[in-house]
Length: 105
Image 1: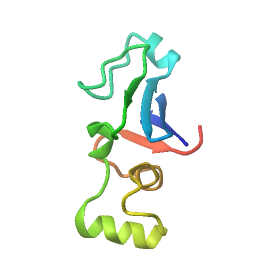
Image 2: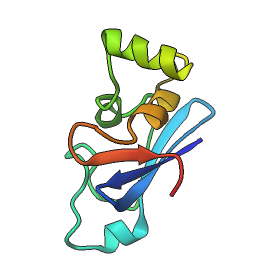
Image 3: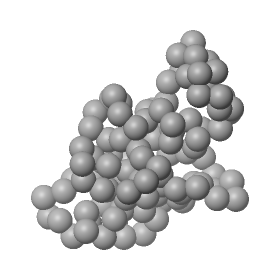
Image 4: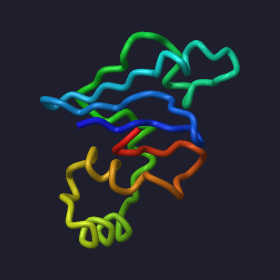
């Protein structure tokens, strides 16, 4: 599965989840733009992927918690424990800050 990361309407990179591993990589055009800034201090601009068995805290913090999480999961019929799908389905707009995640480019 792939989620496309945007800052406003600018493609920043791709977040993938495969075989229990998360990876985030910045888009080449975004990296080449000297005016663009990293989306997080903990995700500095670099060509190499950020790879982890856990969803990076920057992205995890875009997810709802508590009752809102339960309500979203019930309404969207998604598993509360599937952070990647929750992110794809709920971080498309109205997030904290300017970063959103889309299923399509």
